[in-house]
Image 1 (cartoon, rainbow, N blue to C red):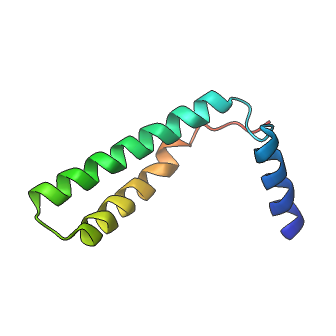
Image 2 (cartoon, rainbow, N blue to C red):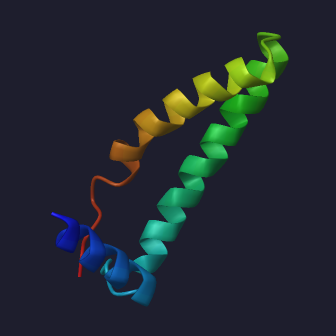
Length: 75
């Protein structure tokens, strides 16, 4: 198990884990932008403290990750 994690980290750092690295970066940036937009919207509209807004935005942003990365191809 640890060998698999070590191999995946090594391939990721070498840039050989994903077939299309640009697609991975694009999808990650989309997720980050959506999460930040939700954070700002919840903080302004719901007048929650920052930690509450961050928790809501993090939950929604994390829930979006499987949708964003469903077509991810590994090398």
